[in-house]
Length: 157
Image 1 (cartoon, rainbow, N blue to C red):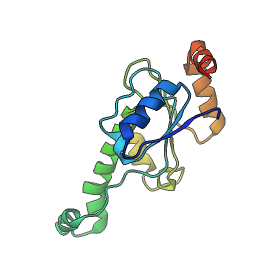
Image 2 (tube, rainbow, N blue to C red):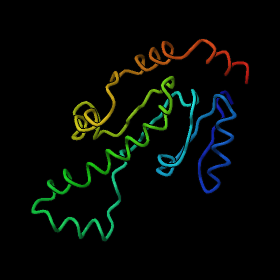
Image 3 (cartoon, helix red, strand yellow):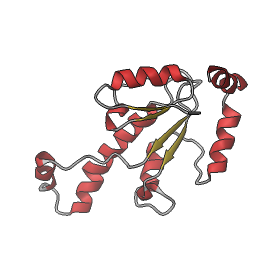
């Protein structure tokens, strides 16, 4: 396998350690990887977010909702800020030090070109280049990563 696959599940620390040592692995992780996981250094080149991290409704949030006359007001005041906070935490996994470079891909259509939350997301994140072209992501990684980054991975294989 050119890119070994690791899945963070119940034994999440074990999978995380194996990923760190692999040099060119792909780590599949869920919501839990957004908090408490430290990947310092140039270890994470791409972070793909399949679904925006909106909070899951529970009895407390349903009760909170009663304080708002309109559901849209509730989403704007409570749900959206919670989602943006978690999204910033996830993105923080890729930029732990000043020299880290990571391409972030958000695949959720609600964040896309005409997505409902696109502008809120862009406003909440650091000022970074934004694209919808895979070629731009490839170019970014090739420009930002040192030549040694690619040699190290080829040697480790």
